[in-house]
Length: 178
Image (cartoon, helix red, strand yellow):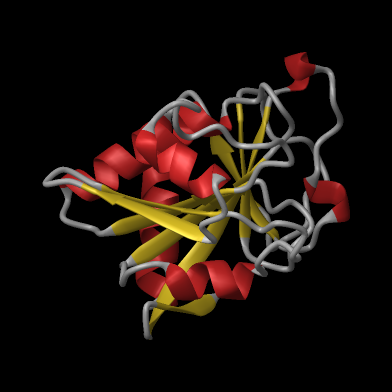
């Protein structure tokens, strides 16, 4: 799926799975590997929890708590924007993507119910059922168990312990989506 990101079309892929399945570890590997190849990666991580991005006594936090709608902190190393919603609805995924700078691929984590192409990380030992039987947007599953019989023909089963294979699948997804 292509989405407008920073004024251009960029492929978007959700890495999904239940808590404790290894999504962040896999994402770290994928991002580091693709970035080393010169692929510009954007990442959006959704959380249902409140975010504490700065110590409460820092100047930027104090100014935000004083009533600023948005506070940008900029340095020669990074830029951060904290926007207070103050009861306004959470920005849609489209709005979040529109705020991102241009990228070759945008990865998402935490958007389980959105109708977007997904790669599921599934580990049976977590004790939760897989998501792929009920989500037609899951195109691939990375798991440490063998593929079960009767998989839908559109679903690719990847060995999570062979991360290079997962990387190849993501690389192909990204190239075919451009």
